[in-house]
Length: 77
Image 1 (cartoon, rainbow, N blue to C red):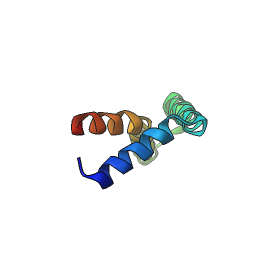
Image 2: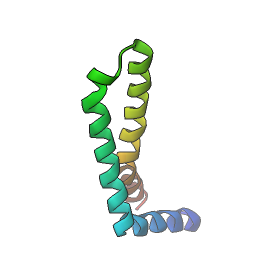
Image 3: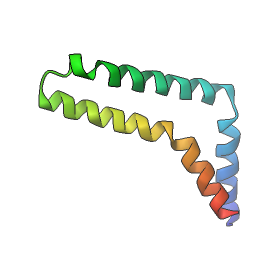
Image 4: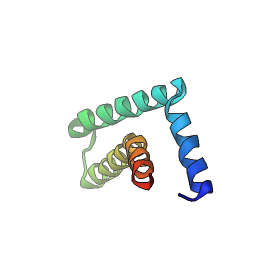
């Protein structure tokens, strides 16, 4: 593995072990669940529903960021 990529992965892995990252991850899950659970009552039009779907997709990607990076790191080993 390239030394620059190695440093990036190590920095990310270090970040994932902080209390701040854990709090951030919990907040993402809370936002995702709230948006998902209220979509049926808050989204009155198709445009609102499609916008909500986009929000949920972005939050879903952020929620899996740590897992994705760890998998990439493991694949490079």
